[in-house]
Structures are given as C-alpha cells and as structure tokens.
Length: 209
Image (cartoon, rainbow, N blue to C red; front, top):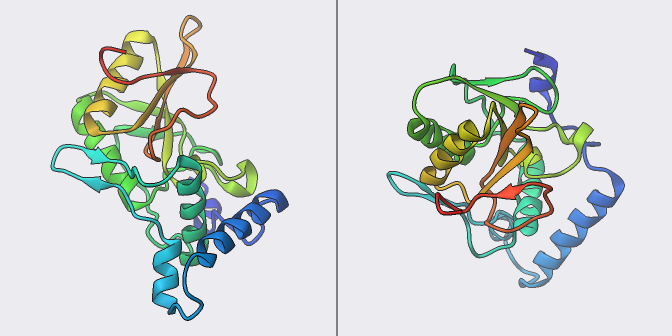
C-alpha cells in the first residue's frame, strides 16, 4: 500500500485552473442566494449539500440536486474539511489494486453502501479496478469524491450478479462497461444522484432492463 498517497491524497493544487474557476463560480452562485449577514454555520450549511439517506436495507440517493451540482458540492466540502470522514473500507472481499486510481478511501456514506452491496452479493472476492481517484492526477469526478467504484466482471453473468446486488442496495447509477467478449468487463457503481451521464456503456435500471 502506498502510504504517501493515503497521507495526503489531495493537495492545494489538485484542481486544475478550469475546475477551480468552475468551483468558485458555483460557490458564489450558492452564496448569492442567501443574506449577506449569514453566519459561518449557515454558510457551511449552504455549501454542504444534503446527503443521501438509508433504510435498514438500502440507500436512497439525493433527489433535490443534479449529479454535477452534487459532485461540485462534495468537492467543496472535502476541500473545507480536509477529507476528515474518509477512511478505508478494509474489506477482505473487495480487493483494491495498488495504484492512484484505485485507492480504498471513501466517505462514510459510500462505505455504508458498499457494505450493503456486499451483504447482497454474498460470497466471493471482487476486484476493484477503479476506486477513489486522486484528483491531483485524474481531475474531479464521482471517483474523486469517493462516490464511485468500478468492479471487474469476468463475464456477463458475473456482471449481472454485481448489478443485481447493487440494485438491491439502492445504488442509483449502475453501468456495465468494458468488453465482456474479451473478458475485460466491469460494473460502474455510482451513488451520486440518479442521472444519465456521458458514459460509453450500458445502464442498468433493474432486473427487467
């Protein structure tokens, strides 16, 4: 395990100039809608968007905000809090490759979703081919805010087993990607608000899809 990456997966330079400008515009737009005499606590509440919720058996993703806005909000929050809630899942069943785009490093809500997913998946090891991505290297995305994970699927049947377990756990964005004929398939699990986003793969909306 690369301890240097875990020590500080983000840095002050992790967002490129275009993304930094977009984040600043997003903050100004949010703050412009509230009174100038707002307290620090109120401002933090403005910039910290409402999280998804949990029932005993599944996750319910936020529905009051777009996927892009949610990622920007979580990016801003991570920058402000220095990622204090991020931890490794440390599941012996979910094996992470040791590289900068596959870190076992997630916020609390994603860790809960992954535990639910594994409870529905059952026995058998799973290999993560993309987990938390360091935005220093890969830019801002659902992966860089710990909201997405890509799991290797050895064939279409295995991919559907992963999809079914994720669906039962309440994962809102489930995508089958890669080349299953060549044994290079994977499933993208993403707990940002449900939305069709640019992805060259097939969306999974349940056992009937």
